[in-house]
Image 1 (cartoon, rainbow, N blue to C red):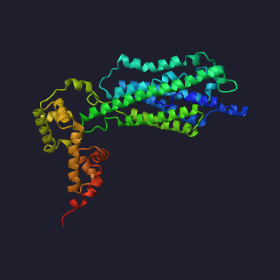
Image 2: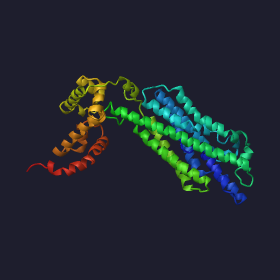
Image 3: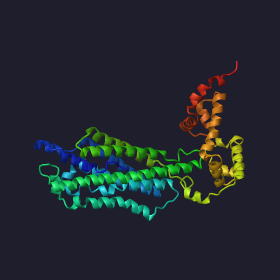
Image 4: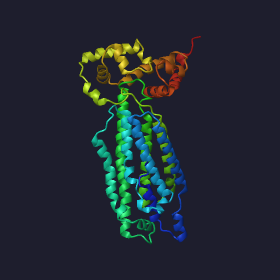
Length: 412
């Protein structure tokens, strides 16, 4: 998803606001903006290649929605190139053609995330209707600019000496309205996508002891980066209409946008399709949930402790709620309710607490390397182990061992 909503109008607006001092300066104002043109040309190539790769991926709904998102990105980039390259001079009548389609970027990202993380593979008519609301609002707002102002008049607006004051007001309104609407609409979907991801992560923590390859945490990072770009763009856009031109941001934003785009396309194309058990089905779980007596939950809690401490099931790096339920002959729902209401935790935290306790013993009682301890206690990678250890103990495994160095010195 691309954050520079209304950037084409911002560029034109800057040329409107800055009165040329001479004919030569006016001519220079109509030249190609080389750096942004090169950057957006690169972005167009990146997205085109991503579309080709997506077409070769297994045909899942997740892939189809990713393709739709990539096509919308490509439309946005073409619109940016239309302005930065100076092509708008030759066909000013179609300026802003991509703005209504750009409003679909937020919904498209949300739909892609929904298909990737939810077990429900269908979207309601209401969801699609809400997605189309943004483009429809922008189309209505753009009617005066698109159909009441000719191409020649649009070009005339670029020069204060030839611009019509009434048409200039229409252009200003169109610029500001479409930008503000895009930002508000897209941030709403950005927030919804972040909530969807948080819900997905909670669902995984209720089912699995290892979630790093299932949680799609990269998506959350990319969403936050896009939000940051949109925030910077908003400040820069508002400053432009106040007569403040931050040319450093003009160069920085496209580069930042390219970086985020490269990250997203690479990670999305390499994201494996999650199984139905790995996707969020919290509604179904809610329907099956039962209320257990306190005594029953205490008995189940005791069984869970035995399974972890005596049978050391936590050492299984792929331990799941389903496997544990089979091991102690208790339903998954009963275990989840016991963990939540009796032990005030979830499956992920419960299993990892035993892993960290075992790691602490090995760090203080043995000379085993940390890299060996990682796999000994059930983790798949050192980075995951370090993060979990520091979250619980407040220090890294190496720092913890160093603080207990005297306890692990061999006896003389």
